[in-house]
Length: 323
Image (cartoon, rainbow, N blue to C red; front, top):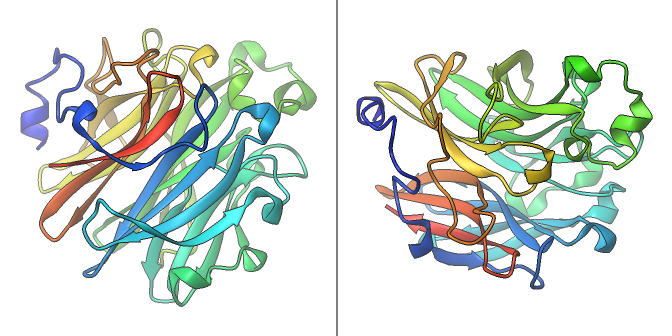
């Protein structure tokens, strides 16, 4: 795959598949900007595909109000089997979740705004089956303070050579903003909207899939261009040649929530080279081109790409493209 990708440095957007041909998996609760369904996270076993996703409403109506887990036997048609509302977490918003299976059972990693300091954090919940996750039994995985950042969220899990790798979105204060106060950073309850940070990707590593050690940043925004504000890894695909990451990029905080998809490659999951230098690789045809949170799963020898996609009316829907 890497050899193929390296031949496409100047590729036009929407290489890989046509996102307009994807099938709708979930629709937003209402029309118009700020109404989204998406942030997919995928996990599969021999019998089913499991999808974590969340519903979001405009800020004055609650923001990220609910996350769910759904199951599918064909990768396209899903039935919900579990849900958590923001009130159960006492949070102003929930974000992307991730699910995995370990020797201790199924584990769900949840990201949400910490009500104590208004900073995004990630917790974990372990259960014998996905239907039995109880957020009241959650344990902390990473807070923003743990990793020396102003936010940590959106876990993405990759397995290789007996290790589990977790990529996470982080908010790093810019040098020019070093004197800003915590109130300035977090009064909106979403530091990513302030323009006082850069949205980066960091990585953590685990031997048991439960306890992770933070290693540090691995993918930074570009110095200029379409991804100069955010570079958030949303999925990683590996083979014998190396690894390909799809990441969400934006030029400034004005495009927060409306990111588009870029591509980067790596031989070791630590050092990444961006291929989408001049423009994103996947976009929606509808303004402002939002196509984000792409994730991938292989199930019964078929590949499925899931992504959050902006509609003509400004809302976001969840789609799958079978390749």
